[in-house]
Image 1 (cartoon, protein in one colour):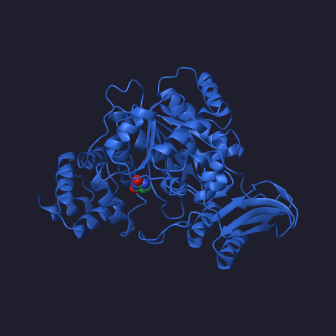
Image 2 (image 1 turned 120 degrees about the vertical axis):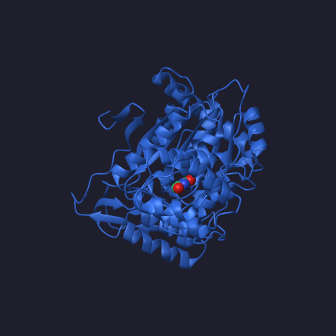
Image 3 (image 1 turned 30 degrees about the horizontal axis):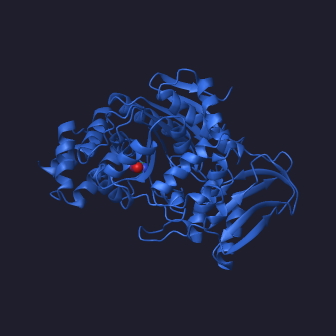
Length: 446
Ligand code: URA
């Protein structure tokens, strides 16, 4: 294989065949192709795009680099979800045990915080003792035993994606729809799923802020899933403001626990239930109203909260946090943030909030950074809400006075108060559309 020739072809707008992708990725995985050649190729992909066949070839090459979970003989459908990432998005922590409590196997594989967005693994690890580094064999055994596991990408799953992702991160080639689609699906499809729900975030706090490109991302991932025998559905959901009130790892874990008890913010509940209904339908439930009834029952009866306790216990954590969230790590410094003017909340900018959580120590600026689980915000202000000067809008949680100051400045910028009708653009519908292999169904009129 002559790698400069492949780079040249891609650079000039040509395509690589599926076999070439596979051979190249195998050689790269084996250390026979240097990072600088792959970097050049990734940049050519970023600038030229990939055809449908190339995206599929890339995905198959990534999957071939690792192993797959096999759930033969489980007797239950296996379903998972993936979110493209946002601020305050703690849906996975509620969703996995909730859907497992309804009899579906959920081997949920998640990521860490990335850029301004939080990560499910960091939120779970704020629970004292919780381990997310299960092997594939341990994951399979746990799903067989209790119906759910919540883990990170294991070294056995799509290892070449991990190498490629690290390279993309430092070569400005992350935000490329086919590269993102193949990367996400290489991990999800290795879970041996019978169905996959994608939560594709829309708006200024999403990774891809352009609505058309995020729809293309949804469609590309659906196509890749469907073509490999995994029915895949996407919901387009709002990320032009944080989801729920809590932003920051332990604060979000606490809000998720409230959600599992049937309490907590309404927007979080609505997005979680919308995704959970899709998961039950993919698992074979024919009647959407019945799916909703089963989910409501799992929340109200305490079965969903108990399922989360079983997962926490199985993964080394302290299950008592579900009954007593005060056992989660607590911030040293807390301050209430008050409205600086009277008027209408025009926006609560998620990207600024997410960046502030990272700066306050709740995310990583380098891969080696340790994450402080305690820091973040609880923001009660919502776009469109009328507020009076000096009314409390949020609480800031930090490790010291400097962190509080950082948080206050971030809220000054992120929470914009306009005059009485000062809302600049109406907030996006919470669950905007449902995308399937058949097309896009707008849900906003419902
Ligand atoms: N998450 C992934 O797993 N891969 C990407 O490329 C982007 C987000």
